[in-house]
Length: 163
Image (cartoon, rainbow, N blue to C red; front, side):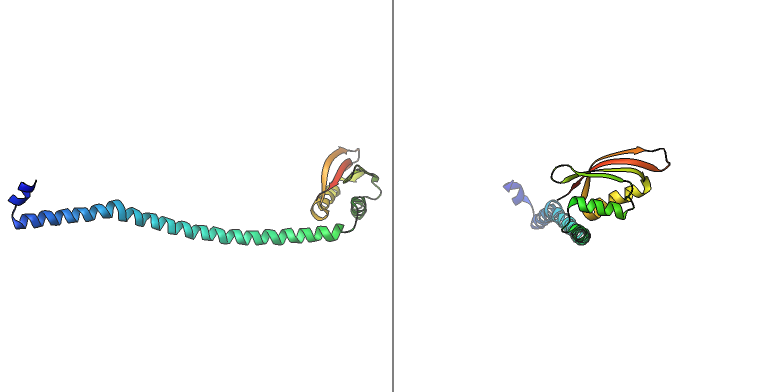
């Protein structure tokens, strides 16, 4: 190889040396620099997207805290200092179930058995939703039987207070 190199003229050596330098520069660019830049651009774009996601998540977390705080405050004020029996009795009478309320009996520490007869189904569902949403009272068991009167049902349910 040395003999071949020495047999070349100065001009040929310069051309081959320049070509080798150019080839080396192109290889470095193609195999190292260009992939590095492409990866860098992808990472920059990923960071921008993740920052946007983080901003959205922070906003959503504040909204969740606001909504949770308002429902917890309503639940605390609605049931503060009252027993489960008192809350269920008062809300049932406020919903217009006074005459239909046949029995409310304790079932252990944090549960009640409630029996309603001939109540309107369309009034029952919102009342149950109010118990869960505003008073933090869960429905443990629910049994609904329709009566001969249209739209009226007999209801037996077990309610429990949630923590």
